Amino acid sequence: MRTQELRDLDDQKIVDQIATFRKELFGLRFQQATGELENTATLRSTRRELARAITIARQRGIDVENG
Image 1 (tube, rainbow, N blue to C red):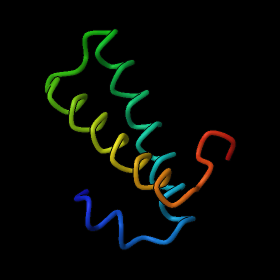
Image 2 (cartoon, rainbow, N blue to C red):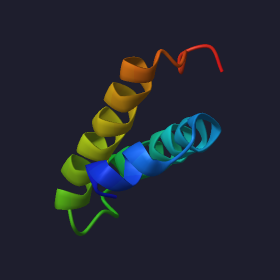
Image 3 (cartoon, helix red, strand yellow):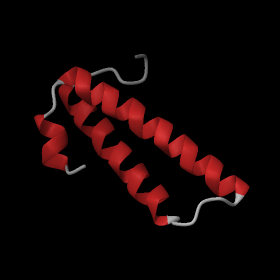
Image 4 (cartoon, helix red, strand yellow):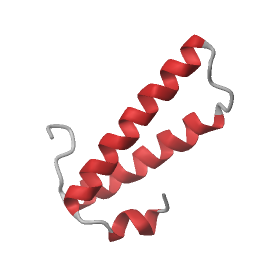
């Protein structure tokens, strides 16, 4: 998801998107640990998307750590 697309989302959708990225990242790390992950570049892109979403949330003053 591009940065501008994230900026266009409302606060609740950004929090939902962060939760989705975290679940996806957990699944990818689990697949990598078990040797099932074929495309390791998805780990990097998901991690960066999560960081973008968290940055935008912090800029808006949204508390993403506690809910």
